[in-house]
Image (cartoon, rainbow, N blue to C red):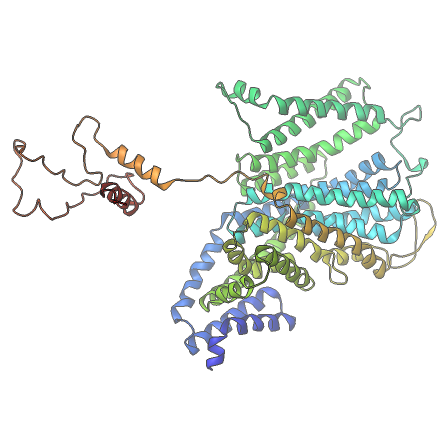
Amino acid sequence: MEFIVANFAPIMFAGLICFLLLGFPVAFSLGACGLFFGFVGIELGVFQPSVMAWLPQRLIGIMANDTLLAVPFFTLMGLILERSGMAEDLLDTVGQVFGPMRGGLALAVIFVGALLAATTGVVAASVISMGLISLPIMLRYGYDRRLTSGVIAASGTLAQIIPPSLVLIIMADQLGRSVGDMYKGAFLPGFMLMGLYVLYVVFLAIFKPAQVPALPPEARTFREPNGSGGYASLVGITALSAVVAVVLARNMEAVHTWFQGEPVTFVATDEKVVVAMCGGVFVALVIALINKGLKLNLLSRLAERVTFVLIPPLLLIFLVLGTIFLGVATPTEGGAMGAVGALIMAWIRRRMNMPLLKQALASTTKLSSFVMFILIGATVFSLVFQAADGPIWVEHLLSALPGGPVGFLIAVNVLVFFLAFFLDYFELSFIVVPLLAPVAHKLGIDLIWFGVLLAVNMQTSFMHPPFGFALFFLRSVAPDKQYVDRVTQKVMEPVTTMQIYRGAIPFVLIQLTMVGVLIAFPQIVTGSLDKEVKVNLDDIGAQMRESLQPENDATPADPYGGTPEPTPGAEPAPGAEPAAPGATEGAAPSPAPAESGASDDPMKAMQDALKQQQPPQKP
């Protein structure tokens, strides 16, 4: 028994692993393990029975957590957009834009995957949508099956890291950090990862062009009557939109000065980017609407199609992420606006109906319930594990690793990489992250950077052969038998499971490369965050004392309400009662009740005042 009591925390952690290996659902495994070891610990005297009395308060805290409300809002927004046909229109349009170049369809899938990630935030929806729409087209025109499978699965997993990602919301909640800061930190790494995917496709287009052929002329549908592709007007309206955005960004201070009616000399970079891009795409939309309404024929069919298909989701992205980045809305409020915007877009496109709304609401309820049950189970386990000094055991285990913070980061990322074979990102966020965060904080690691780093690593959990969920999603929609293509009427071979697994390996390596880049260059994440404000408590104490000094009294008052000592030889004021014997010498004045709001930390202010009253010590 002494051995069990001395090693209760590691035995409890091993018990959780046994529960999970038995195949029980994770939420119930966490809760059952926590309750079982809780009662065992009470019987063995490891901790007091009052520990279990804290559990209702923990569960009430979950229900009162406003941050978690963003999960159903963003899920509903993504499902409405996905089921209203936005993904199909985006893939069709972007595929026509990039189709004439080698690897164009793969680039279109990556670009649309990033757009869907920034609007849906749901991996399953992105992978299934692109698998259903783009997979038959890419196979039809001779793309390599391994590349096709890998690029679709990898592009769908961008929803993990590009805001508004659900895993970033959960990560911020578990790390005790702002969701807005987590979104800011993940913004650049997410698009850098997309850029690495693009570089890989471009590399194949140069050195292995047979794997990524261009779209044949007969498959390019948006052509002008004279046979041209219509790229000139598309380039023109894109250039005009970019010029408007650049000019707006360069003159943002003047715009704010005009809008607020007072001089503004500094505007944050993230605010400049969001407002400038929003202004640029809005100008392009206005031009396209005027051209169509007045039938000016200034834009080609391709340019008009791109404008009307791309700009509404882009404006929705700016509406959601822009308000969060600018501090206008919380993530929960941003998610609510995004859900309403998605409903409006679906209604404008005449795709909104009651069956679609019911399906989206049912799927949102299922996913949100899944997250909450895991969180409740993790809370039960975490309560008992902390009572058994589990965090101290984890801290001693990890802080003793060689290499300091870098060694800790390498060991943690290797651990998360292998745990991702068996656990998805929700389970990793609720089980592993709360154990690692205190150690990272004690080692001086920025928790926003740490959270983004783990989020990129967890993204590989969707791509691990043979356990990756994205691979399962793609397998469910990829053809597993011979079929006849509906356009070419040719017999097409199926996509095998091994081809899907082999196609995922290069993208897993790319994701791990991104993890290494973030460890080597943390400023990629931290550079976009607001600088921490340093507070000098001594200056605050001095300001408090000055504010408590009487304005029209030459005699300095005791800053804590005490009666000032009388000047030797001075007569008492008229009407003043004589002091009691012995009250003036050797007795500390009785402090009067502090004024409301005078001091938030009276002990600190008193210590500062005593330090100033002490004479300087002689050297």
